[in-house]
Every structure is written in structure tokens, then in C-alpha cells.
Amino acid sequence: MLQEKKEEIVIFLNMNLSLKVKRNIILLLLLVAAYYIRIIAATYTGMVHYTIDSDNYIMQANVLKNGGYMVYFPNGYPLVILLVSIFFPIEWGILLLNIILSVFTVLLVYLIAEKITGKFSIAFISALIVTIYPNQFNYVHFILTEVPTTFFTALSVYMFVKNKMGYSGLAMGFAVIMRPTIILAPVILITVMFLREQKKEGIIYLLLFLTVPVLLMFYGYFRTGIFTLGQNFTHNIFITVKQPYSESYNKVQGFRAYLNYIVSTPGEFLSGRFESLWNLWGFNPSDSPGFKGYQLFRIILGLRFVIILAGIYGFLKSDKSNNYIYLLLPAVSITIIHTIFFSNPRFTVPAEPFLIILGVAGAWRFPFFPIFLYFKRIIKKH
Image (cartoon, rainbow, N blue to C red; front, side, top):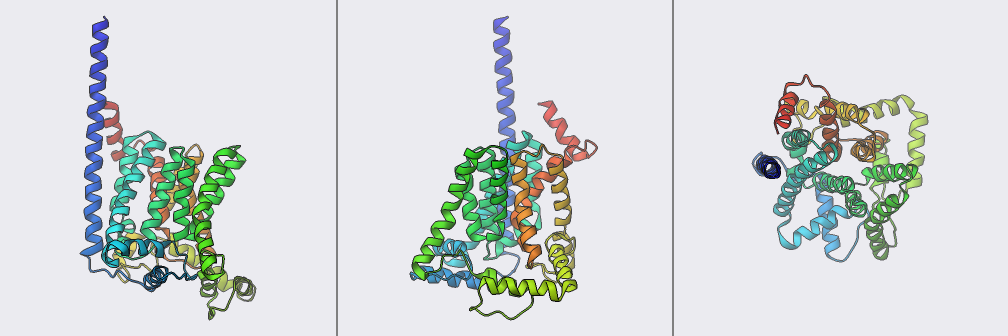
């Protein structure tokens, strides 16, 4: 009897090992596919690599390199460009970095989904969608903040679901110094943690999160006498209200201009806010960098409309734990801030992988979906 039990245990362990090896091979093949898709997107599509923002980021990186400090855009991404330029030519180095970070984002999506749901199929499908979804590989060919912000946000979420609060906060700090409009995500998350009596975890997350932006802001203060991540916020206000901007304008003047815009032209204000929301999540955005002018590709990018709806549904069907809340918060932050101001389809890129995880997890509850039935059968067999 004892011998039979030992044999059963050995068989069980071998089966589990075999299953794990198969899954790792499948994941590896997916990552290889993601790598080649991103190489093609970055180098063989003929898409441009520079925008006006790209030129400004590079200019600020050069200022940093020469010991100065500009306070227009946040200096997180210029710092990345500076570090890359030490080892590689800027264009080639940034494209290579984008490819690597985007592939690692796919891996992180898989790991996050597997950790939260415990299901290989949900994790694999989520990673597969991120691999082939145009909005996730389109921006690899740009020298812009989309790819690194998405990576650091994904790293933060992964560390969070692994209960490594300090590392999670630190990673989110790096995301915020590149894309401050994601700032509401950590703010809301910390608030939720305090309300749920998870003060110790919340404090650890908060302290490590603040470390990165505060250090950068202090460095800027020592160089310029201005304690700020960046001053493009005021410029963005004047872009929103469609008024001329001067570098001498401050945030107070910006807020006054915004309030005056609301009071004097309420109809135009509301119309503009709807247009901003539509440009973020509508199924046919009016502006699509990289695919601009190609209606078919704009429609494909407009699948974000499905992704946001699926993500909301998945969250509503979840247990509303902190893990699921964190998945939703990048979209919440980006939507609130860019609806209040102006938007661009690329602004949703850092939020999309987490909406995809939520959407797939929610759709898993529909057993009549053939693809989900197929993966369920695979799991049951093992």
C-alpha cells in the first residue's frame, strides 16, 4: 500500500512538472512572437520615430547631460534618454529599450493575471491580447513615454499582487515621473488601503512611491530654485481652453483661465470634455498617431472601446480586492485627468494591459465562449 502511494505521488509530481514545462514553453513562444512583432513595428513599418514631444524630451536630456535642468516636461523620461545615450545612439537605443520593455510588459501581464486568478488560460489569453493589440505595439517606434510608463506601471502592479509594497511603490514612482497623469492611481490606492485598515502596507507603499519624484524634484530645486516635476501642466490648461500661452504664466493664471472658460462657454466646455473622453476610449478616435489617416487602423485602435467596457465589467464581477482595484486605477486616473483637459489616443496605452486582464477574467465567467471552453477543458484534463 505504501509503495502504491509513493508511486502515485511520483506520477502526480511528474504530471505537474510536465504541465509546468509545457506552459513555460507556450509562454516562451508567445514572448518570442511579441519580440518579433515589436521589432517589425519599431523598424520595418516606415513609421516616424519623432514628434514635437520627442524633440523636447531629447532637448531636456541634453540639458541634463550638461548639468542643467529644464522644468517644462517632467524629467523622468529625459533621464531615461540620457542613460540610454551613454551606451547607444539615442534613436537606436530608445527603440531597442522600447522593444525590450514592451516584451517584458507582456510577461508581467501574464504573471499578474496568473497570480490574481490562479488560471493559466486567463493569464495566457491576457498576455496574447497585449502581444497582438495594435495600440500596445504601435508606440514602440516612438520616442515617447508610453512604453516605459506602461512597463513601470505593470511592474508596480506585479509587485503589489506579490505583496511587495515597497517595490510596488518605487516602480509607480518611476511611472509617475514620466507620466504624471497616472498620479491618481497611487493616491486612490493608498486611500483605499487606509480605509481598509491596511495602514502599515499603505505607509510602506507611500514612502517608497514618494522617494522617486521627491528626489527628482529636489535635484531640480537645487538646479533651478523651482520645486516641481514639470510646468507643462499650465501649458496644457491653455491648450484646453484654446488660448495663447506664455512661459511667464503660472498655475494660478491657468486655473483662472480654465474657470473662465467654463463660465463663459459652458456648451463648448462640455462638448470639449466629451471629445476628450471619446478620443480616449471611443471606437473611432479622431486622432491616431502612427496610423493617422488610415481609417481601418483607427477602427482597430478603437477597440479600446471594447476593452474599457470589458475591463469595467470584469472589475464589477471581481471580489473588489485591492489587486483588482489597482488594475482599474490607471484607467481611472488617465480618464479623469485627460477628460478634464485634452486627450490623445496614445494616453490610454499605460492603462490598457490591466483592463485586458480584467476583461478576460470577467469574460471567463461566460462558459459558452468556445475559446474559453477549450482552455477550461485543457485545465480539467490536467
